[in-house]
Length: 299
Image (cartoon, one colour):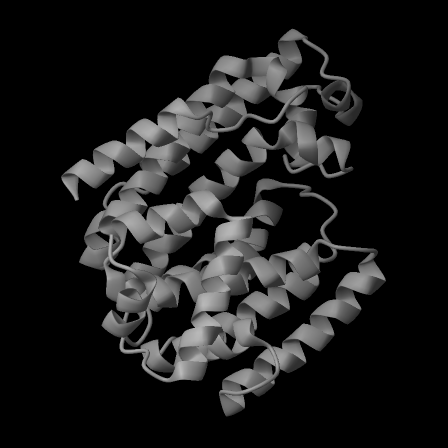
């Protein structure tokens, strides 16, 4: 693995201030998201790593503001952040190293700014005001408004000039699968925090109440609901087949690893059954280590 200095040089980032900005960003990502950061460093082509690290950091910043505090505090925080982002994109400057680095990445890679705007708008509406999904259609609207642009403000930086329509559509399928797996894996924590991320209409179809889930009742109806949601997530994950052909070669090992880990996590959710309502389902340690080592060997 090349040094961070060599990685910055490989990406053509020579300005001392920008190199310092990207270094601060990388440290931030390492602290908050050590597994994704190490996966990028180990598996992604070095010229892509600084751009993608800036994308992850920006995505996390928006997520944090959209999910912290009261609805009024979230709205106010996102309004301030949106103004700062717009100024950074317009001038390439500002007081925040993270936003300076991200604005530079967007300009250098030619990512269309409408993805950034769409993500910020979705954060202020779909995420900051989130109160669950009534139907599958509501879930799909959430993906369109927030989760899809959220993944493209990060992964879109791999493409010089941004993703084309086919590439963007592939990432829409990817985020559908990723969100379903994430919601299932985090059921216990979300319910404890007052968030129900399964469509209410599907609870009604199975004659399951929110209280059934919050109290982790082991009933045939609850088991049937969870099995149905797992099948839907599996189908969504299967629908991502072929995405590697639309990923830049330098990022393919990373995306292959992420997809494999989603499969591991979904299998763990399926094994857990109703226990997924009592404790969030993680990757564990062995599966990520084995997956990363195999990917590193192939790489």
